[in-house]
Each structure stands twice: as C-alpha cells, then as structure tokens.
Length: 128
Image 1 (cartoon, helix red, strand yellow):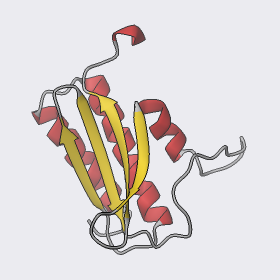
Image 2: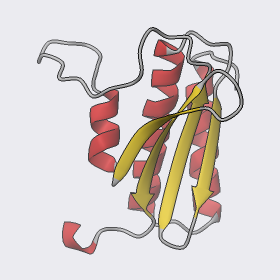
Image 3: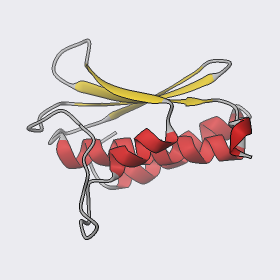
C-alpha cells in the first residue's frame, strides 16, 4: 500500500473483510482490526517510507498481523508512556493490550522492518 493516510482505512477494511469471511468471532475481529490500524498508522507516521505491506496469517488458534515498512525512521518501535495530555504515543500500548504478543523483526529481504502482533483466534472465555 502507498504510505498515505487513506491506506489505514484500506487496511482496516481489508482485515475486517478477510476475518469476517474466515468466520472469526466479532470481538476478536474487532481487536485484530484495531491492531492493524495502529500498526499501519505507526508505520506511516514513523518509518518515512513510500509504502507499507500488511500481511495476515491465520492458524487454527492464532491470528498474526504483520506490517512491514521501509525502516527509514530514526528508531525501532517501542512502548512509550505518554503523559495524560499527550495527543500521540498510545498506539503500541493498544497493540500490547489487545494482543498476546508483539514484536519487531528486520525484514528478510533488504531494508525494512516488520512489526507483528498475535491474537488468539477465539474469544478469551475468562473475559466473560
């Protein structure tokens, strides 16, 4: 996708459609869409690239969302603790809260990095 704000909506829409077609529960689907939105937004905001690549991997029990950027930004993504009046800086906090695990890896083919997050495919029964 091109590194433009409209790509965030396209990524959310595409993720929602794919997960709906695969029968993923609405709560889990909504969380995966939010994670996708935050990862794509972060890539657009911080990577200074021309494009981002969004991937979805489904297994019987996991959803893995990956967003690859061109790693032209000054630093690797990390959790931050923004102040109460900060207007930015909460994206990875949301990703961390909604996913079971997330991380950053270098892209296998050339410059770039992939930020990924994994979610359980079925709703957490303890969440009630």
